[in-house]
Length: 187
Image 1 (cartoon, rainbow, N blue to C red):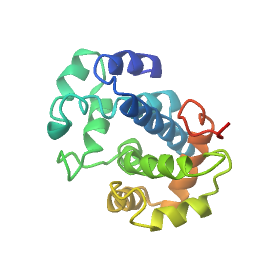
Image 2: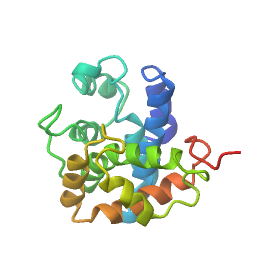
Image 3: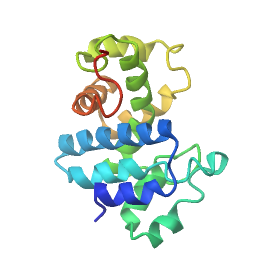
Image 4: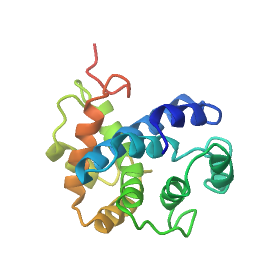
């Protein structure tokens, strides 16, 4: 089973751009929060979240086309690879998210981008962010416009959860790592 430390080792060979490393951490911690919610293995879900954009820096136009084989060779399980491929469902792959891990990754990938952007706008970053204020940003389609809200909604529907509920889990999970994610209170 993939650990977070092993995921960091694997990712470090392919993901070096600072913004992509931060995004990988955002998704890792969001997935850890989702695993806690579902009573699943938090370390494993966090590791899968961290690896989700493994090939993006090298192959942005062919994202997820260069993922499975290198991860397989690195010892990542088929279940973990499938979850990573499923986060690109309808955009880059035809791997439909079926498990809670797959559905969660599909939902939180884009959602963390909006959370990050909203936190950067606040004097105290994410540290005192409430889900109610976040939802106002979420509903404003001009805010973090590149983040695909329809995918987030679809992922939440797959999970049988409201966007607000998933957002609350993600915000709380990211709060615990605010400084590492560069969204803590400004000095």
